[in-house]
Amino acid sequence: MRQDLTQILSWIKSGSRVLDLGCGDGEFLDELRKEAAIQGVGIEINQEDILLAIKRGISVIQQDVDEGLSNFPDLSFDTVVMAHAIQVVHFPDKVLMEMLRIGKEGIVTFPNFGHWRCRIYLAFRGGMPVSRFLPFDWYNTPNIHFCTVKDFEKLCAARHITIKSRSMIGGSKLSSFFSAIWPNLFAITAIYRLSA
Amino acid sequence: MVEILKTSSVGIVKPKAAKFEGPLNLECGFTLDSFELVYETYGRLNKNRSNAVLVCHALSGNHHAAGFHNKDDDRAGWWDEYIGPGKPIDTEKFYVVSLNNLGGCHGSTGPISENPTTLKPWGNNFPSIRVKDWVETQARLADKLEIDSWAAVIGGSLGGMQVMQWAIDHPSRIRNAVVIASALKLSAQNIAFNEIARQAIRADPKFADGNYLSMKSIPEQGLALARMIGHVTYLSDDAMALKFGRELRSGSFDANFSDGIEFQVESYLKYQGKRFSGQFDANSYILMTRALDFFDLARNYNDNAVEAFSVAECKFLVVSFTTDWRFSPFRSQEIVEALIAAKKNVTYMEIKADEGHDAFLLPIPRYFQTISAYMKGIETS
Image (cartoon, rainbow over all chains, first blue to last red; front, side, top):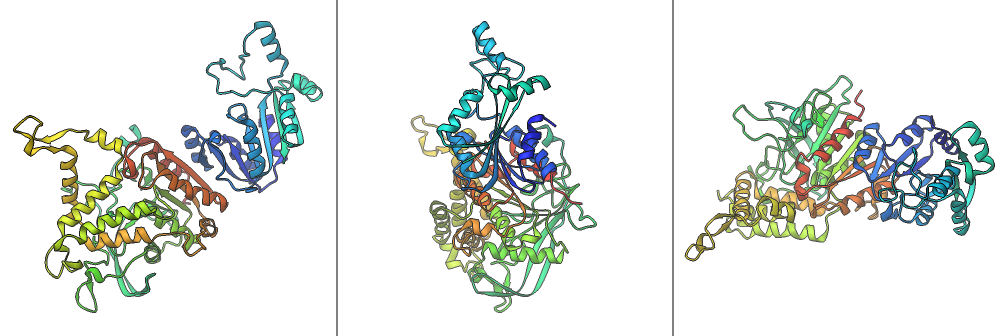
């Protein structure tokens, strides 16, 4: 199982209700269902992905997160997850607040733009970083709101969001070791467990 | 579309009839001592009797949902594109039951049936029927067929209302609810269209206050007009532009020729109206539109749809179509919102389609794939 999934799984109680924003083909919810018997609901805008999720037997609502989540009542889920999607939405701060209105807890993962490779790329090549993980050019990327670990924590502080735990994933064992010490420079993926 | 072309038909089917003795207490307060339902089945019921699917028809539908009635029949059932071997509602997997609802005019007890007390057709004296009554009669049909629980109950429009009613009236007897292009209740605009259709029928002198059968007349004009009004609302502006545009069927705008001008759309509506008036009973049409108007899922639950759905145990698939303005995506989203708040398992898909409300009957690829994917995921063992 992917390292980030293992981490998230450890934060989700068995049998709980989980809302996954930008659930894609439902792989993550499927995994959670098998491992933790959760009751999952996904939100997705891409119909090809929704069809794949339906085939897995995952409940998915076709909805654009950017158009709001007001159809979800307060605290109607135990956990609201947004994996690798915060950089895609128009108003990350608003979505974060909505997540913590709908769920008792929120889990957010994102690619850390403060990673040393990104810094070196920009510093020495002078262009927006393009990599195996972020294979887009600046003009066609769906990723419109990149942030670093530091940026994200600043936003949480400004919005009085409690960071209950965080976990940093590096590319290797060694870089994971370093990313625990110096996340903003060594973490490739940042994972946060939040509450209001 | 390849998926569609590969599929085949259920072939020639024979309608069956089931007679039900014992009182049926209707929502309107009237009691029917007995009634009959006509239905068709496609596919085979498995050993555990767990693969049965109920298809609920809409306003002008009937039991003939798939296949042909004889080898010269050139019109397949109304949902033939979706029901059959290898089709989304796969008859290799499912045992499909489709009935003509009580109050209909295609064989089930309704206004054209004989009233046992007067020995004359019921006509406009047939009791008012509600969606809840239909679900009750469908449950009795399930009893007769020894089907404890439906793998799925499926319906579009008025059919979707029956599906939702099933989910809350018999939660343990339905495992999947497929609600297509439907609503928790009609809007004022929607009721208004129904009322115009009814007035069109009533204004026809041949309607004779609903006693036309005993006078051996048929209010064809009124019924045709009612259908024409309905038909326009089932299509979208774009669909009509695409299908007819401003094409003329006859005449021309040249001087001396302008008398006989007829647009294609006029001709089409006249044809649809005439065809419909030859196969539908006016009292039945009024009864069905009334059932539509009166439906309000939450009425008995403090007008709270969340409370209504709270008893449901099944999974839900809700589907809407972008250009449907009679049962718009917004109406389906209300269903979804209530289901989410009631913490039910719900999947929602909004299909891009030009065809308006009529889309729910048509083989639109994305819609086809959605029903197909959902039905494939249903356990029947």
